[in-house]
Image 1: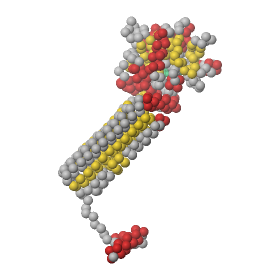
Image 2: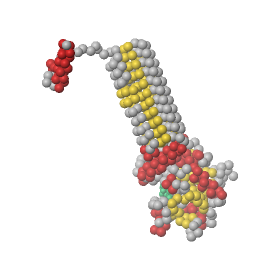
Image 3: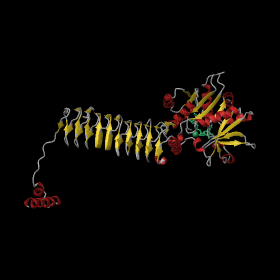
Image 4: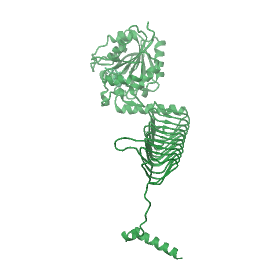
Length: 481
Ligand code: UD1
Ligand code: CA
């Protein structure tokens, strides 16, 4: 007897023609993972150490996507089409002496939770069943296999929509396409499945009728949420499934102490992590491996991707990707933080500010209209409005180093590579081409010349000239007093 009592076979060999996509269906994404990724995670949490993923269409791409799930072993389906054949090749790839239970999952049914499968396994074992189905009723059962019961209400067989009589098709009890089987019964029954049906395929669903006719018990567990049991066959169903998953994730974080003001416009990937007392304002996307520490406020209108946010930080109306944001940092409105932007505690990236591949020291501020790229900014720095690090000379990117407590005048351009020493200052409009020693004031703008009367002389008759004459006359009157 094998040491294992549970094997999981995941069906992922189909193309998913209704997606009309160059990407195989099970690699389409929702909530930060692929459809198949969600199923693999569920399989993992069930402790299935015998996981077989049946592949065929675009098999290399799907096999590559299994890299994050070391327990999942791909198995190639051959020319024989159908879910029955897929399961057959899946169980042939199990250890020969395996005689436990086989949980069959579908790579395109991503939302059924592990607890539902645990309930199915439990019912299967306590009832001594040979097969256990998941029960679901749908007001509109179109497209699904229908569960046909006998007069005593016992499951008799499953009939595919394309093979159903009008009477059978009227049944609203559908087959979500996930099952538990006894391995030996499944092997025997599959050996009897043919391809004599509307699609010329080996139907896994035929196994139910075969087991029943052999006198074996078929058990059933009702799905807690029929909508969650639905598969994804086209992009309408993909967006519906994404919304169901998202509301589940939002509710989970609300129960963990996160304030989400508008769940309908808040999208949180399954891969993100939020601390208690985080506040999420409307129209905000928290994606990828983003983590948000306590008391941070995010949004409205903000997108965070693979970003780390410190405690008490505030990010408003901003786009942030692969950044690290310290405690108490203030970002936005309308900031764009790109890969490698690292803002230390108490720093600020304000309005119309873009920062990439740069560190901004504790308490340093980049408040308005700035581009900071490939820079290292010390602590207590203030970059005046319109500061630009000119990091690119058309060939290479260069670094700008700005020491602690540097203050730059408005509209300073720093031509990298360049260093501003600690405590240095720049005049407004400075173009800094040479290093500035610590504590020096750098000025590069020529002294101002005023050409008296230029507007009156060269633009006479314009509103500006009239205003100038009035102001000059008033001034002369005052001076004459
Ligand atoms: C299947 C069920 C149907 C059920 C529905 C639920 C059968 C015959 N029908 O129909 O009763 O209501 O799921 O979603 O099982 N696959 C393979 N190899 C194949 C064919 C399919 O691995 O040769 C995989 C697909 O990639 C997919 C899954 O099996 O992940 C289901 O296949 P699909 O073609 O979508 O089956 P349905 O027609 O939806
Ligand atoms: Ca399907």
